[in-house]
Image 1 (tube, rainbow, N blue to C red):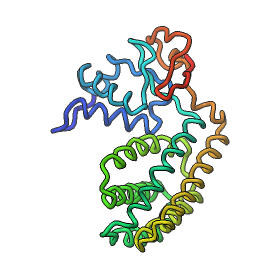
Image 2: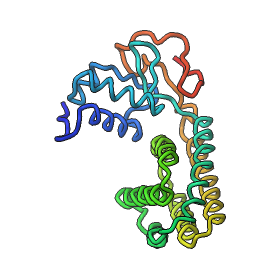
Image 3: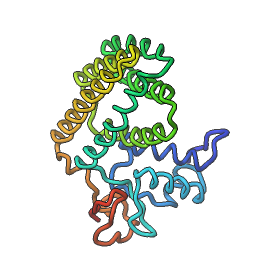
Image 4: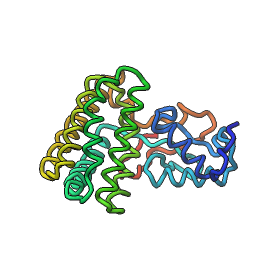
Length: 255
C-alpha cells in the first residue's frame, strides 16, 4: 500500500500517480481502472480516487465505458496526427509571440544548453536531463508569452505528448536532431526573429511527427497495438463493457 505524500491531498496524489503510470505506459491502453483495486493500491479512499479519475477523464487519458468500467484511453496514429495538428497551431503562434517579448535573455542560455545536449543522450540519465531541459524551454515560452489561455491549451497537449513520446521509444539520432532543432528555435526567439522561430518550430514538429509514426509502425504489432483491447484481457472482474463505446474524441473504441 502506498503512503500518500505528506502535505499532498489524496485526490492530487492519486491523480499524479495514475497520470505518471499512464504516461509511462505502465498502465497501457485498455487497462481497467477498478475503483476498489486502484484505491487500495494507491493507499487512498474511493472518494479521492474518483476525483482523480474524473480529472483524467477530462484530460482525455481515461474513458468510462459504463457506470462500472473505466479504462485507460486508446491512442492511435490518427489521434497522434490530430494532436500534432493542434500542437503545430499552438506552438508556432507561441514561438512567434515569444520572439516579440521584452525579455528574451533566457532563450540565449537555453540555445547554448541545447547545443551541448546531444553529447549526453547516450544513457537514461542523460535523456532524463534532456527532457527536463525541454520542460524548462516550455516554461520559458509560457512565461514570455504571458497568455494563460494559450498556456492552458499547451499544457493539455503536453500531457498527451509525454505519453506519445514514451510509446515511440527514444531514438538517439532523433533526440540529437531534436536538440539541434530546439537550439534553432531558441536562437530565433532570442534574436527576436518571429518568422524564423515559427518556421523552425514547424520543421521541428514535422520531423518529430514523422519519427514517432515511423517508430510506431515498426513496432512488432504496428500502430494497431495501441488501440483499445477488450477489458477482459486486463481484468477478470471488469464485467461486460458492451459492444462499442464512444471515446472523448468522438471515435469508437472497441470493447
